Length: 546
Image (cartoon, rainbow, N blue to C red; front, side, top):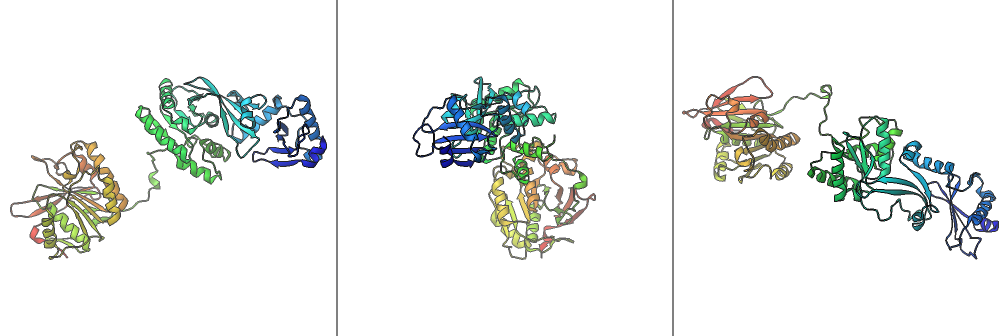
């Protein structure tokens, strides 16, 4: 029989390190080589004639003797023989599988992992596979099951990654259970075992559950079972640990919404951290298990980064903060990047003042208020949202203050809108016009009918996104507010309509009062950047720009 091997033998090595032999079958008239042998770790793990010849124990022995006598194959086959069922052979292959995944052999055996071959597991033969790792699973919905991770296949190009039990359905499988600890939910059992061993070594308590794929993770029954498991184990939260690839991150978003809808507290893996660390460590994979393995091998895995979470609270040392002085549009009255309130009773000159500021910023020329001069530190476009005065009135006032002319870079919007619903649209305008000053006059007309202006948290929910926008784009955000009725002897900062949250959020509050002779007095009711409370006076007739 040796002549068949010597004349028609082809040898190839697969990406997984196994060796494939192909030669003419000695048991039939074989014109095209149809006999295949796979050798891995020094052991023959598969013999097969694709023409259908049956191989009994005697024929297998003949093939083995023929191969071991061929000088070109010396060193490829162990003297211990070809039977994968031998404990030492199976252990060697299982240990190789575990080593690549950062799992100890003892941990693998504790979870019931073992090597199975096609002659022991018929389902492997059906998909052209010759050996795999058997992984028992404990399902919460449909009972015990298993998964087989395929190691060797006759066709590497069409090779499946794993096999599931016949007739298996989407289920939630328990890797470990710890009462009162967070539940980590991942895509597959091997990932779960990798996480278990890493967290156990770091003494981090956690329950770990998984499915057998990212699609199964999004099934309604699996999500409900997960919520039930959280309740049963008194878990503090669920950590969604899908892989940092497109499918995993998309599934993570679905799980986040659905679990939150079931009143389950949820945390999410920081996928940017996972991807960045894996890239730095030279990995082309983005699995949560790949991250743990790579970090462990690099000596970087620790309690703080083993499960990197998206954290909205990120305290930093005061020593690391670079000090920067506050900049102003009109120093010291109108700071940039924050909100300023201009408030007063109707008819006291609030809108006149904002139009004067608009003309000054638009032209870069000073605003004269009697003997007081406000000089803009920067000039540029202005966005003015004003709905109380008609366009004609605003146009007349602008011309009156700017010597009969009207700057062409003050952009008015006369229709009121809901600040909550129009946030994105306002930001689009800011990006388009790049203003140095944005004015809303009067503020209450834009708060929206559904916002409770007398509740601090409701007020901040509406205005905080706008103050963040001002900080992001560096413009001065000025809002106009009326005083409440019967303000009496209340402190100046508490006299405006609505919650104290308005003044609390603003960094500067300017209060305007006009006496019977028409003199307008501007007082600083609040200023976060200067301790001195100053005031100055002027009349409408004394206002001009230029």
